[in-house]
Length: 90
Image (cartoon, rainbow, N blue to C red; front, side, top):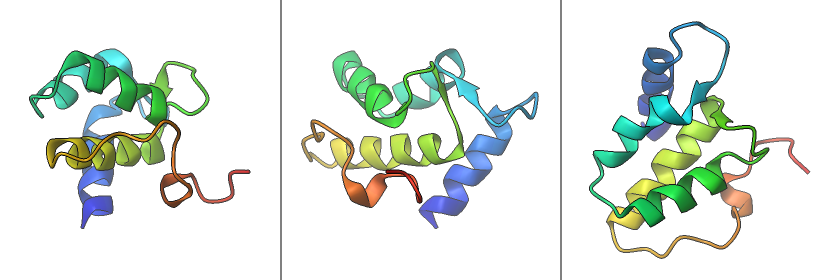
């Protein structure tokens, strides 16, 4: 279900169909969670694994998972756990 929601969200944000969304496009989504800016920044840094300033569909899913965890009181990891790493990533 989480994957379906993130896929639908990604499709709605990726207006130009280039397979990525910018930080500016994600800000309204991330701020809806009501978390501190520092948490949003940490989530972005973890989700934007290649640090190119954009999230692909997997990155959006990772961001949503991390935001959900943070909202429930879980501490954000220092690095992206293997369970959230992109399939096939080294």
